[in-house]
Image 1 (cartoon, rainbow, N blue to C red):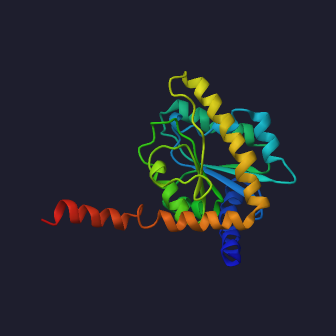
Image 2: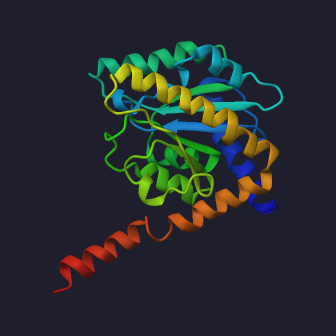
Image 3: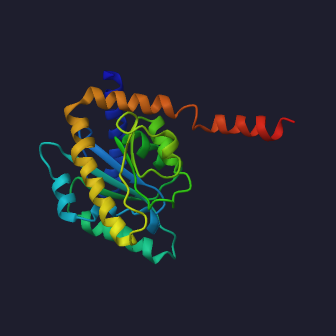
Length: 236
């Protein structure tokens, strides 16, 4: 367990070197680090965590239980809505030393983000996520999924055992109201479960990391997928 924790800090430092190179911000490997990284699209709600900015700012400036947040990705060049979300995150977090937004999400950067994160945040609007494969590889690399129960997640999730699930709103409500409720649920989850577990119960956190890594393989790896295709579709 100690070696796992030590290795995670080493990998966080490698990621933070990239953050420093892009943004000039120096992050701390001893601090709980949340990463949201994927294609910028409106339904993925990259800025959901900023919905109540006062509450968000209080969380990322907490001295006793500090939190760092990294966003990464890029919108399509003509997706003005997604570009606006990217810019909104940039300007709102520019003055916060514990927050950074990176451009790009290529394979090499994706690898560093997954290995260097403590929490892999996934908060799309329910029923919009086709799969969410980044969460699978994050779990394989010692990052804990905090996610809406969509895409692959319901097949894997055991709340508090191998991940944390964001409670969803009634899907009959208007979109804006669902966003507001689910943002509030995300704050509650982080403040009441995720952050306290990381800082107050490190042994429980490490167990959660190890359980997730064990349970995500082999069910969700590409080797199983390729074997299944061969056996079920091509073997005859």
